[in-house]
Length: 272
Image (cartoon, rainbow, N blue to C red; front, side, top):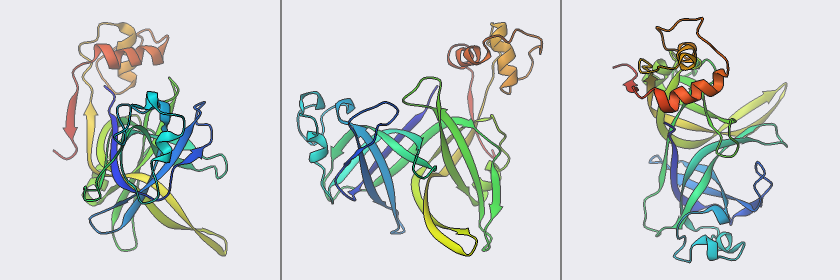
């Protein structure tokens, strides 16, 4: 079961701009939304969308199938209040070499100026590398994790989502292992930091999911009958299967096991 949903509602920092070719997609637009936290600090979140792929009615107009190219983007101006839902993804910026987190927009709508701002993401994926735990000079506990999720654009490829956890949740996240399945909830945040290069320093911005809930997903593959699945489930963290079971087509069989054979999952809250 894949879980990857994000919803944001905020103020357009500028009118959408044409984005360069994204994984072979053309006519992609980039929209930056400013979304205020309760503290008053604003996160600037990137929404990429392809006009002819937007679902449903938007801006009280006709469905996008009946719009002229560019019509949807032209309806959004600087200061417009916009709601967007879609999936969390990343791409690598060829100019900077850095990873950019964004929402691949599947629905856009205008909202009233009195509507509440929104910033929420729900993601299930795999820990891509060992979590990094640290403490700030002020004693704040932080753990950085990278969650691998399926690409929305290319089958068999993945997006790697940077996530950050705080305090007690950071201590729990530090105990996660590479390859472990997790579910998390949080908000997409933009965060400035200072990068030093010798005597020079520069302020950079990073984007990540700031998690407020994190669960390990425990697999119970006792229902698997396929020996291929059995072997790969064992490699993925399940126990009780012979190590000499056939392992041909490992990735394909593991995917099949996950989607079809193993239906005995439990959501285990860390620390319970």
